[in-house]
Image (tube, rainbow over the protein chains, first blue to last red):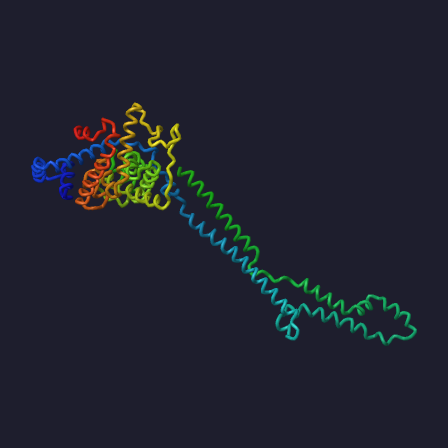
Length: 228
Length: 203
């Protein structure tokens, strides 16, 4: 069977052949039993396919808005709130980063200033210089108080012995310890470096970020409820 | 149902209008998917995907046969499903009979209007045809399902499959011949009312 003949028979079966081609094919069918047999086969197959029961859909295939990705309409201001909230969140974390780095740099500068043996520390760190100034004064003051000690008269030895127990004398005796303690105290009392971004700004950014996010959630819920 | 008005509304984004079209065509779409895929669950998935895809691209519908356009969409969904099936082959879960064997035509799908004997006959003939359809090459199967099961004319099928009319005629003829050869193997199994000779007389 030629493919062309097979196609002609199938088309004839569906009534899609032109009248002239149909007449020609019908003449051939009368004289060619093989052709007629194939036509019978094709007709049988088509009949059987048409008898195939049509199944009902097992469920409805109607679409929901979620399926097609439709979202409820949001107010025009919504993108602005989203942008402001995102920006505030970003700046909030950025401010923390900036303050942390600033604090670390200040403490590093202090460390180098205190431990530096040889360099001119007053030039490296003005803060350190001012912190050391009272310490130097503390070391000089007891020296001035010691000056009159050798001029004491023998009659006053007893008094001098008492003087040894006075707070002034104690200061003289523990001069070195006092210097060290003062230095430590100065170090402790030295004001911590001021944060580059004040905490009031950080609070404001946090409020904008959280408030914006809450607002967006609220708007979405209200829009979805209205949409339904 | 004013189909054109519904299509226009759906093109404007109306989901309700589109859903009216879905309800009208869902049986045809599901049957096409079922005959191409040969599996109920996969056919249901492909039908759902086809409708989602159709809604998203309905703006591109420029007139002509809406059924043909839908059939093209479901055919594409079936091809996707077959590709997925090839990547991740699965074993269907058919209910078992009392003997512990798989039930080919589950009773829960039975048509309540048929007697048990008619139901068995229908199941057997359906099973035989589906078996032969499954053995056809995909491009033949698509054409024969659209033309002989869905009753679409050549022009509609050609538009849906996007191949020339001559190719449709050729594929349909060869598909019918192959089906006939395959179904001859089931001749003794088919009940009398479904014998091929009776069908010829009936037509």
